[in-house]
Image (cartoon, rainbow, N blue to C red; front, top):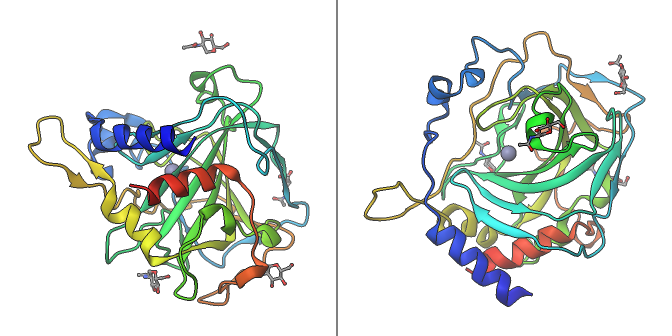
Length: 289
Ligand SMILES: *[C@@H]1O[C@H](CO)[C@@H](O)[C@H](O)[C@H]1NC(C)=O
Ligand SMILES: *[C@@H]1O[C@H](CO)[C@@H](O)[C@H](O)[C@H]1NC(C)=O
Ligand SMILES: *[C@@H]1O[C@H](CO)[C@@H](O)[C@H](O)[C@H]1NC(C)=O
Ligand SMILES: *[C@@H]1O[C@H](CO)[C@@H](O)[C@H](O)[C@H]1NC(C)=O
Ligand SMILES: [Zn+2]
């Protein structure tokens, strides 16, 4: 499996040419009116500060099929904004205040550069090195077009990725904050890439996933973006959208969230254990480049 998959990611990441939209998020509004912050008020990402509201009814989400090997064809590609792992059927999320069951369709990453951080959401203005998004579509919808017409058509799970000097490289799969999945923030926002549709129920986990510096470097310097007529490839970097105001939105805090500040959430070593097989696959693929 690793062999064919490694070949596949090489092909897509090095060979795929991505046309517009512009890589400058401030210019997206020209081509996609709903990306224009002055016309629409429920944009993402936002800064998560301590003006949040505890909601005792927000318990852990139910992640179905995340800890088993899924069958079916998965594909990895560089879509020009990120590395996207498109998953097959069999994974879903529900509970935790979500209005329905949502089927998992893909996951992808946002990052900065060799010396800059690139999470999309910030916590007390701090930007983490990376952010992973697990994108889920409401199960009643047959396709993305229909989901983008529903104000809660998508549910995205966001995980911050931080670096830890204490650890040697390991598969990302080993890193989900399994014991801290009940600690999260919730707000209603939108897609952070065009068409910026305001249809996303966001869940942001407060305890980050820890990776090594070398794993971070795989993202910041080993993945390339290519302009259609460019003679050379350039590293795909800083693929995060700017922060937006919350306006009148309430940002909720789950029952067990701790409202961590600064560096209080450091790695727990072997205590942090693992699920979410796609991450193992993608982690291995990226490392294999
Ligand atoms: C708390 O969360 C539940 C589930 O999402 C929601 O129905 C309720 O309105 C929320 N309460 C407040 C005060 O926001
Ligand atoms: C970037 O991330 C590193 C590693 O976690 C952290 O030490 C640093 O404070 C972050 N920088 C900013 C500007 O948030
Ligand atoms: C998406 O689903 C809607 C609602 O069922 C349907 O009307 C539409 O034709 C579908 N679009 C595509 C591109 O399949
Ligand atoms: C993660 O969860 C464990 C077990 O509930 C808890 O003891 C620990 O304090 C949590 N970690 C953080 C950083 O909140
Ligand atoms: Zn994203």
